[in-house]
Length: 217
Image 1: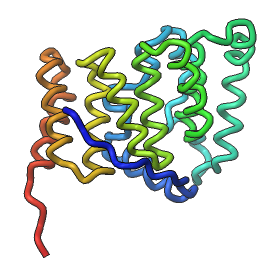
Image 2 (image 1 turned 90 degrees about the horizontal axis):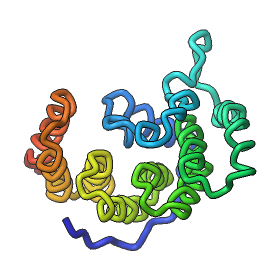
Image 3 (image 1 turned 90 degrees about the vertical axis):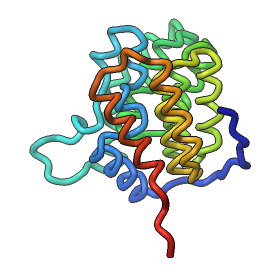
Image 4 (image 1 turned 45 degrees about the vertical axis):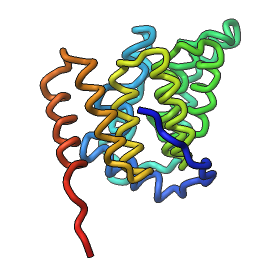
């Protein structure tokens, strides 16, 4: 599964690009970290009370997508009690992870990446936080940084389904590397024989699509 990384591309996506990317991924159910769930399922169970699913962050009575500023205010409000706890326990990796999850769910990828980075600095073996960090880096346009984080995650947990799934998605979407994507997804299926039937079917469908020959001009 070794992959030769190209120099990281440092760029920021526009608001429109962020919404477009997130919207497309959510529409097909393949947003990074969502098919196999993100870090909240691996950390303190209390995190479920603070998790803000991206779809739920849009008020039902409001016909338009809230602005990024609106979404940041939502995340800031929800994060207040966690940030208060963090003042007395600044190196709590699970707590940092929960805060990062809040900001990621509201598309505040820069803030989320900062908290996920602190979480893995405090505990390098926190695979869930590292995988979410990779997702944020990808959404910020740093595919190589994201791949690097996922490869580090797999050194700590070679069978982590979320890491392997995201690695395949990034190799396919950002690196145009269908063979690398298929290798990651095949490893996912091989190392997770008890994978839920719907998730297994989704991965198998992705493998079949990645293997299809590209149309020629």
